[in-house]
Length: 501
Image 1 (tube, rainbow, N blue to C red):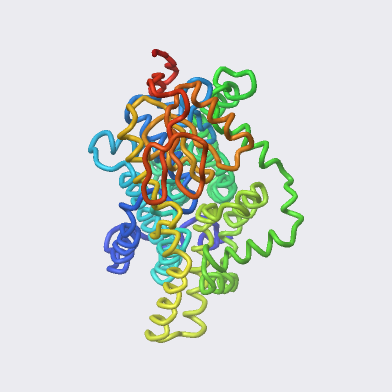
Image 2: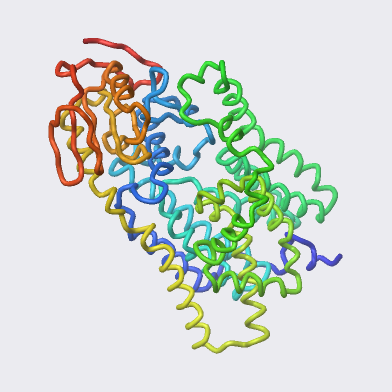
């Protein structure tokens, strides 16, 4: 096997110097598009995920929770509920920025995602450029910059933008390390792999393309690579091991668990019934041709299979197929998971563009038209979820403001707004997020009253039997019976449940 044919070894030399204007233009456009909605509240599609990480970051920044325990404002077991599904590295970064510079936590959370998203586009360009040239690199970077899922979740207070960045950083650094005299890049690859696995343990699948790259390299490097993987696995092994032992039934943290990796494993036990459903595969195809790649992107991906050395990326593509097969329910219910699998698909689109360019030789006007149509498709799928607050959520901020005027900082409140805790987050109070369809809602409200709640805030067309205190456009605030005197219970500090009357 010649050097040019070896997977994950550079097909041509490349450096960061003398990058073309299109590179800088793409980075500017990537950031500019995502900055449009940067001041918008964390409301809309998957608001629960956004406010969960925002709660975690806020509690860390204020010192209300230890840095090793992602803690929510949702009360469980006498304290803030614990979200022990992953360790949110990017939320930790956001917490530090907010604590250092102040301002809006929502903006800092979105800005963190924008920074990771923009850096990912830069890595995609330099990674593909050094292997296949500037044309394929430009096409691949455009896909990563303007794919609908990338626009939507590349400016959300979520972890997926950082997962994409760490994935590309691992493979790019590994690519550079496999060149002679590039030993320092192994340290970079190890560090990024550690952060990737700590953030999302299911990204262990990235070891498949990484292992294949090392296997096809010089034998003397395999021992170093194994040592690097062992070091990178250590932080994740320690944290997830702690969670599995303490958050399981009978563990010291179990009463406070809101959701944990233990519950996630139970909910996504393999093999899942969805894998035997034709509807699931139809939806995958629909997502790939829609919110993930758009029809033009999917067509170019298929054209990439005609590229003479597309099989270089077969292990990476296989890893993503393995991820979908392991977590079909997540891909079925949450389209933001397609952002995680987007990088190798973007590379294939870049190869497909190279095939089209060589065989059809499109003129400049044709290129402009293709790009314009692709961007129109991207706008079609991304504008509303990325930049428009749904009508049913528009009263949340005003309702939360009314609650803050009625309550003290440590006073628990009850919120009712769909099934999400977004209203509780904007109230900036500990408490409970109840669903209006909860069986025996009156009993649940009474339980909250006994634990110190005086007020219930409702957004939407829901009525409860309680004294109406105030109302506004789309919201109402009620006082629970028997709570005219404040029963104070401090929940803010981790593990503190001091009660006074």
